Length: 436
Image (cartoon, rainbow, N blue to C red):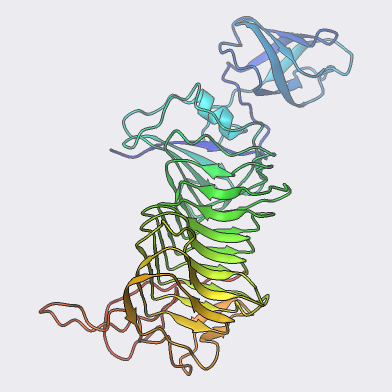
């Protein structure tokens, strides 16, 4: 696979979502909202938008207009009157081509208008500054089906692809996309999904902010099915979940969701910071892994920091090297399990009403600690780095040494954020900085 083919979307630029030749003398009839120009409208794209103005200062009210009906290559009918009740014989439209200089107006427009690169895949770059507003759930009817070797990538930018800018997508009360194709997302803020699961796609989400925005979902997930890495996921709404069935969720900051991360069979949650979620991380099926996470609650929660297994028939989850603090309301649990936990140990539990309430544990490695104070530098202020003066989480993560002839010493810490300097040289662990 070579370099993906880049195209651009900028909602602040009054560009078109309709591929046509530039024209300067279209005939517009206000009463019927009909626009005629020989050979200009080469694609049937009802629902797309076209930017019109007048070539001679006539009656066209400059702006974006939705195409209601495509009659033929010569004729379209608009959804609203572009002439304020007056005809015009010099309607003008400038062609856009999806370049950085002439970007499309919406993501769906770009998907419908580009020719899919079936060898390398495509990247749609969402320019930062003005939120792109979707007019429906994204579909691949015109674009075709992305593949593992030729994926569809949607990524934010400031001006040029991959420059680190954060684009914004307002889903306008609909889910972002369907779940049956490969789409990956990066450097985006995505929100306003209505009462729907927000993002469901067989791809990866990296360095994105995802939240409910203006919508009011109930019992929905902001992100589901996707590999979710390094994202800020927050405010999922009533009874909702931040990240659900992610395959892997790693290095995310999850805040203010009734359930922070929900794992199913073979899913992994590692090095996440989960804050003020009634249930921090829960294992909903067999053989999920919860390793090296920080779960914190400032609200005297009566819930559960880490739910090792929600059903007696679910078994062999791993709960290892986590820190749980603040589930100190009536009945609150640091780690709770109904079904079997396959491997448990090396967890730091502070200020929880019940540190652990467990069913069967196949292998209990022990070494769970009870720090005398909060192990965090300033959790209330959003700093979850470890306070080196508090024993019980620094240099105590499993394993102390690797099993085998190498004898490699480990000085990793419990939780998501590693202390900058262990007691001695050991395994290098990623450092993260987060806040809300």
